[in-house]
Image 1: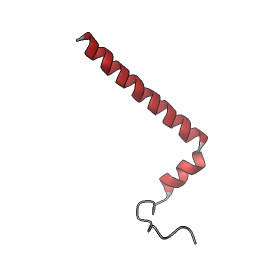
Image 2: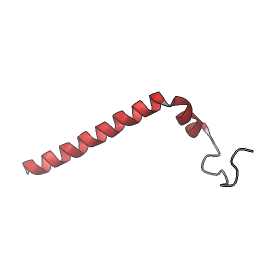
Image 3: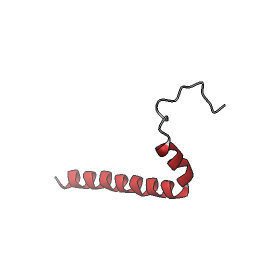
Length: 52
């Protein structure tokens, strides 16, 4: 049972590291992430439209 707890704790630790890294990424590249988040046509943009 203790090993299971250790295993879950390691997974949680990895997730907190991922969250920390993602927040750092958002702080370092705010323009890039804002462009992705605010681009309303991000998912609907056709592949051939590369910004004419």
